[in-house]
Amino acid sequence: MQTTPAVPSIDVPRYQAPHVTVARVTELLPTEPVDGRLAGRFQHLRLNARTGELSFYESNQHLTPHDPAWDETGVPAELRQLWHLDTVLVAETQRPRSVTEVSELLHFQVDSGHADRPYLNVVSANKLLDLARPIAQELLDGLYNVDGQLDWSAASWHASRNLTRLASRHANPQPRAVDCDLVDFADVVTIYPRVFEGDVLDLKGEALAKRCATISRFLGCLEGWHPEITQTFGRREPGSNWVDLSILGVWSWYRAVILAGDPRPVLNVRDWEPGQKRLAGHITSSASDAELRAWARDEAKHAAREGYRLEGARRAAHRRRSELRRQEWQRMAVVAREVVELREVLAPLLTERAALLAAYVAARRSDEEISVQLGVGREEVARVRAEVSATA
Image 1: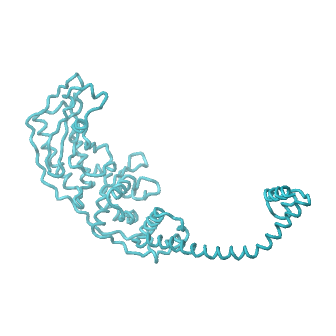
Image 2: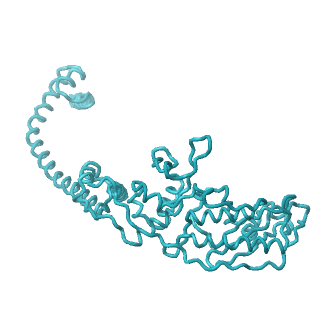
Image 3: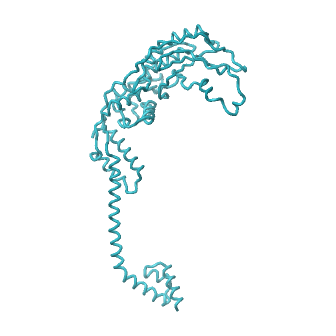
């Protein structure tokens, strides 16, 4: 059996990104809020990942009078969506492992509305868009695109960090070397093939996305889960043993492998010796269908860790349960015959014991003595005694 699965050779396709175009700013919202509230940071850069349009977006929360009814019902959903953008990327501080997919609309909050950087006017907003355009193009060009779904790469997340840096009061995009904590999974698995997990190829949809998000978040960061990769990848914090490491493109790599065809050799469960031993030891005649499915899934995972794609596990589990039930059904007939034979042998002995019991009850022996001597319960002795007394 293999002990280290062979790593598939795959080139994850990049996004054939549209050319980034800038939507010029011609007017902006008033900055003075209503009701004497603080306006806050309501200016954003918006990038449409599908069309390539880069625009300036402003939330109008500071201009919307407060409705007292909201104190009971809450702010309507459509307003919450406009005011509190779900896709605001704070990429310089947010670890990319917390991002599971690339949204169509990406927002980068502009750090404005304070003494160091007042709210942007039309001129300064257009200037920011011009500076952001090449970085936005870098972001889109760096994305992976597998089966029409976009996924982050180290290069694209570096660009998203630079858009956040550009939108900050410091306006200081950094070179790629500064973000050396960002690493593509394809690079990691090339140098450390043991991080490849064959059972991931059996997953689909949400299950695949969830598993890949876990790998992105914890690979190399948890003790016992390939911490050796931090010897090559990541950014070591000065004066600390901690290595900052963010692995991107896990989902796109595994999905590309799946679409290219599962490269693992097929192994029938009949030839899977460890599985055959567990089949005999774990499957019982009373096992439910759910338990059989769980066993088959576990065996597929065991085989995947050895580099194989297991076939026939569920059928083998059902056959094992059926065989055990067939054996038990046949055993029932044997037991029934043996019981009849034993009853025939016991019949005269039971008759003799009943006669002895009645005789010694009449002889005024105690219930306890009779019970011990004949090997019958005291309740039976008491019952016979009552019958004898009734007929006396």
